[in-house]
Every structure is written in C-alpha cells, then in structure tokens.
Length: 103
Image (tube, rainbow, N blue to C red; front, side, top):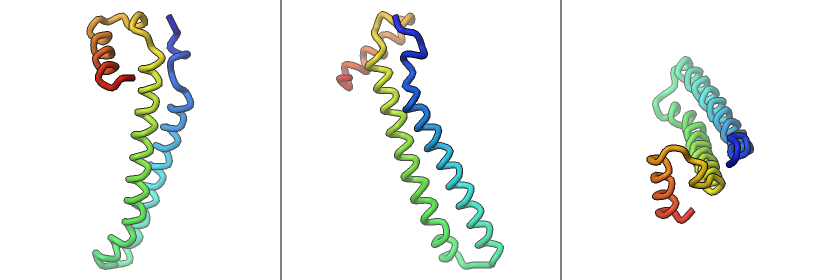
C-alpha cells in the first residue's frame, strides 16, 4: 500500500497551479485593458478588438489546464491499485472507469 505523497503527481499539480496563475494574470491584465478602453470612450468594436487577444489566451490556458489535470488524474488512476481503496463504492467506480477508458 502506497502513501498519499507517493501517489500525488506533484509536477502535474505544480504545472496546474502555474497555468492557473497565468490565467488569473491574463484575466486581470485583460480586465485592466478593458477598463482603460471604456474610460477612453471607445466604441464596442474597439472594445472587442482589445478583449479578443485576452479571451483567446484565456481559452488556450483553460485548455492547457484541462489537459494537465486529466493527465494528473490518469497518472493517479494508473498508480493506485484496487487494494489501496477502502470504500467499496469508490473501488467499483474506479474499476468501471478503468474498464471504460482502458487505463
């Protein structure tokens, strides 16, 4: 039976935190740019032009975040054995997911 610290994919979790912080930073900078554009009295088209790069960056970072989290979950699912799980219900769920996804 493995301990929790052996099962946790720390590099994946660190990558997820970094991507999350990057997303927050991009969101804050984008919000600041929109506020500056609104204060300048720009048109709706100009506001969309200002917001578009930040929205694309946020979408890409969200996709990267999903990939990193799924990779971490797959690594944990591969590392944990059925004997390590105490709950029968959770064990059955993990086995069903393993059969369905062939992990």
